[in-house]
Length: 207
Image 1 (cartoon, rainbow, N blue to C red):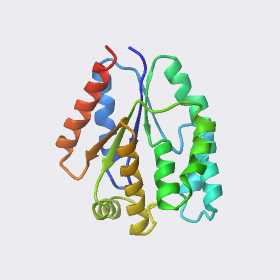
Image 2: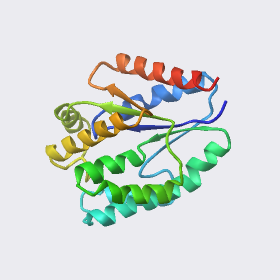
Image 3: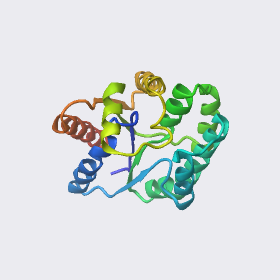
Image 4: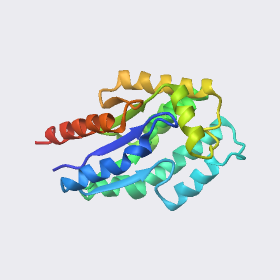
């Protein structure tokens, strides 16, 4: 069975983390050895950059923010993602480059062409086989965040920022067939049934 690269995306508060354990268990029950990771993060260096980028008191330009994110991604790809895939393992990453197009592009207004140049340079052809996009209305996402955690630098952005991020995600989902858009405002069981169906489909594609 060839390895597969799966990414989870969505605006802050969309509920990605609520389904990680379910995905982990679903794959393990089928004997699929999987590496679970996240962005920014996944390596010692990338986790240090994550802490810097998410800290509420960090003050950086949009260009610096984007370059730091791709520096973390380069280390992540080189040290975690590509070695795992080469060893025959599946990789599930909580966020990948789609997040840069959504947050730095849609949210902050950086030209998509500039992000694409960095993506081509860093990824060298690496793309997810499946992207699960957890989608909820912005108001629902913000209510969830306010009720469950202290907010990081991105989560503290205004509502219209998160709305632009959501619109950018949905635009990419309409453009790339690898996306599976999940209505994450529903009950957990309903969302997980759709996740299982899509993962089953990915397994069938390999036979």
